[in-house]
Image 1 (spheres, rainbow, N blue to C red):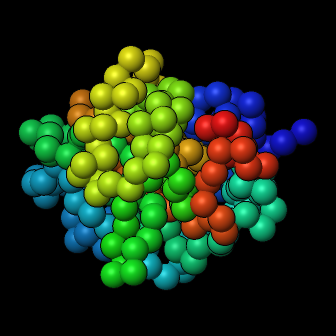
Image 2 (image 1 turned 180 degrees about the horizontal axis):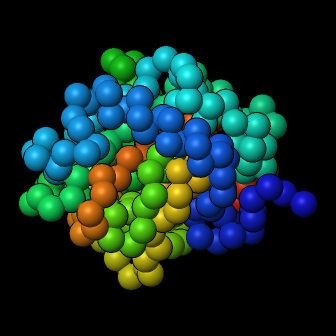
Length: 240
């Protein structure tokens, strides 16, 4: 039996992996990120921006335990195929969303750019080259700015982008319009949970209505082959 529900991933475009790392590892990682920001978890007066970006660039300590999780590797093998993905060395970018502030203007529906260009930039296409991990480093409930996910929208995006390669700012409105009829799900959970998201699943940030800052890493996982309809792994089956 697979560690994740492959049929659910194919149908919905995402799946949740509970406790890829223990909760205490998430708590320790969050403490490291607090120190990186220079802000105080005990003093909301220091929280002056709705979003502050931190990052893990080294994979050291508690932060690295997520990306090296054997449970995560098993889940990626199940969805991408053994040898179908490239191990990461760090979590990468970690947006921290703060409560009780006017929301940032960064909540548009989109897919992540994943097709590498010779100049080092990335574009969007119907044959993406990465998949997305949403790694929860704090408790995230419905009011705590969970990432919003349009269930099943990967099929809409695949159809809308077939044969096209677009700048992310051009692709956003295209996939938004194509998937606007889809029901919503929310990336909620506790420290140590990871959402594995199909690269064509349309998603967006949400306004923070809660009381505690939300910490969540957004980590792309590079694939060894572009996702192509008719391929043999779950990523390909999901858009076939």
